[in-house]
Image (cartoon, rainbow, N blue to C red; front, top):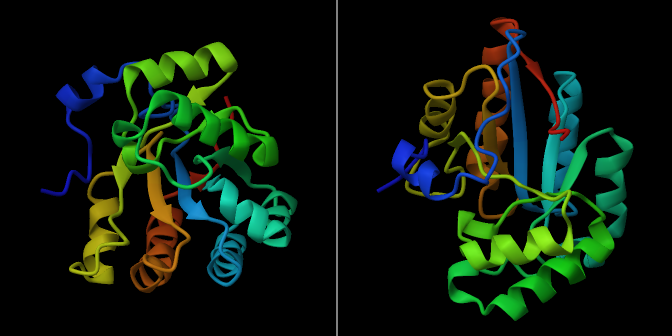
Length: 208
């Protein structure tokens, strides 16, 4: 079952996570991209965002930052926000707390951000608590809508519909700048940007 938009019950289990940005009445959407940077795909995403004068937040895997530092610097140079996504994309539910925290710290030594998104959205309460002790300013970011762009059983049009049927003012929308998501993302993303631009929306990065 695809949970494009987290249920109220699911959100209640994790009240400390950031699921939605405050509504300002100014029609703002917060695009996010997970699992990069990728040396070929991330620059293409950056070009699309520039075309629509859109800012976003990139949750980066530490190992990818280590391998592709120039691409990581490109994200920052373009004025987008960055966040930590662990060093090796660990699933918190299946990872020992000490290993999970070590992965976060190793990644954030390269990324230097107060934003963190747990891979797969899976994190234990105990891990959230330990992270808050390490960094009291840390915000653990979830999402309002997830595009499911990596799912090869879906068409680009379905990915596009996943977003526009569920995202409104203040929504945090998740795409992926990864090889697995490329085909759906590269087609759906411009259409999502066009749709909301025509409705008077702005696209901003997450700033806490």
